[in-house]
Amino acid sequence: MSQTESPDILVSSPSIMKIDKIDKFFGGLHAVNQVSFDVKKGFIKAVIGPNGAGKTTMFNMIAGSCLPTDGRVLFNNKELTGKKPYRIAEQGLLRTFQNLKLCSHLSVLDNVLLGYHTRCKAGLIAGMISSKRSRSEEKEAVEKVMPILEWLNMADKRFSEVGNLSFGEQRAVELARALAPDPEMLLLDEPAAGLNMHETADLAGRIQEIRDQGRTILLVEHDMDLVMEISDEIVVLNFGKKIAEGVPSEIQKNEDVIRIYLGGDDA
Ligand SMILES: Nc1ncnc2c1ncn2[C@@H]1O[C@H](COP(=O)(O)OP(=O)(O)OP(=O)(O)O)[C@@H](O)[C@H]1O
Ligand SMILES: [Mg+2]
Image (cartoon, rainbow, N blue to C red; front, top):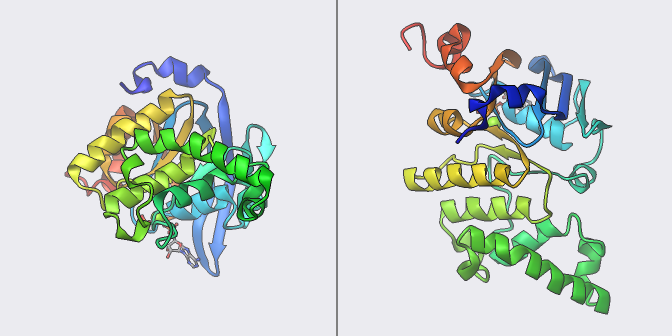
């Protein structure tokens, strides 16, 4: 059940993230134009909009892989703007990618362990050195990530090379990798892209479960059925600008959204 059925809870909940007039130019292209919104702690917020609206660029700015031209991002009241992606991950903000970024020649388990090491004390480099400390941390890491693989029905495939998996399974590995460091908030960029109906329905349930564990989710997605089913709030971008924000029932009725995004006046 979406938490939006109690919109008062949404209004009174604290924000975990504040996007403040974030702006990005690529040369003369204004890809993201003075966009501001909050993300409430423990809720699912979706960012929707047509191709090229600036959704991924916004994610890249939040996650530190793209420097904003202007504006700022606060996470738990701390400035994220200008920080390196690994520093942002250390603070508990993890992401998945629209185009999967997995190491296809490594096993499922190794890919997920790479995610875990963003928060491991001995770190990735130490993890590669066979010291006693890193070996014990490696054992601990495997114990921590295996329940995630079991939850995603991927435990049996833990030693399979990622490049040999189906696309849906690779998407599951990407999600497991982002969950491995126990993030407080997840940025999911088109997690349903390329999934079949069955896999998409499964994903919808899992994203809600992740939220119900107390995590916050910011989701970019084109699958409107999925967005309307699981989102607590939605923000709509078009040509880099925010054109609407609200709960799903408000967005479905918004005339600008219907006209600009959902397919014309007859939609
Ligand atoms: N690195 C870049 N250099 C130049 N232009 C870019 C760059 N990245 C994105 N753009 C442009 O910025 C605009 C926004 O792109 P972005 O990828 O953020 O859109 P999107 O909303 O994620 O689209 P989609 O739904 O297709 O994934 C597009 O016009 C795109 O071509
Ligand atoms: Mg995109």
